[in-house]
Length: 232
Image (cartoon, rainbow, N blue to C red):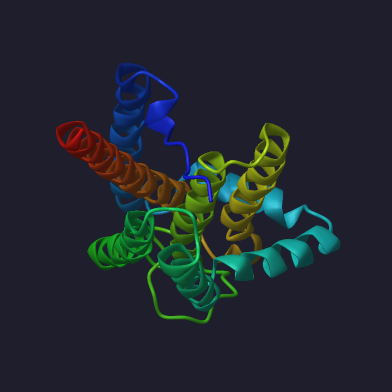
């Protein structure tokens, strides 16, 4: 089976890692900026605006969004993550390091989200339909969905599928990922700023894990090439 083509094989390191590092720093720093603003002001005006927009949506859209939100639940993502991990470790053409980093990606984003929830302890919206006990900031459904579906987008991107297939699948996954985050505002399950922070955590951690994969596999590739030259 064909080995995947790394993103770093398709672009100069400076063109790839520079912008990626800047994005990671922006997203991770935005988590704390949003968190401090939310805790200092309580309910921000943008949060109320988002609730007002969601409340004016037709009933069919609200029902659809509350159904979509289940695709970001802990149970759903946990089951899918185990299946994906088994595939990556034992059946895929990818290096097993990809499976290792996938596990780090999912465990790490969950741990970071829980740590921030404990740190900020923001109360849920007053009118929430959520019956759980976890705090509101940040949105765990959103951060988990970005980390999980974002990793699938990466796997598709480095696969040997046709460009049309890659674009089609990745656009669908991106829209689905965004829909899960937005769905948390329906039913007043999360504030808009909770969702923004969830996107920031998921994306920032995802980029770190992808960088880890690329660096690890790049070094192994260079090491194998060096050993081959020595033997020759």
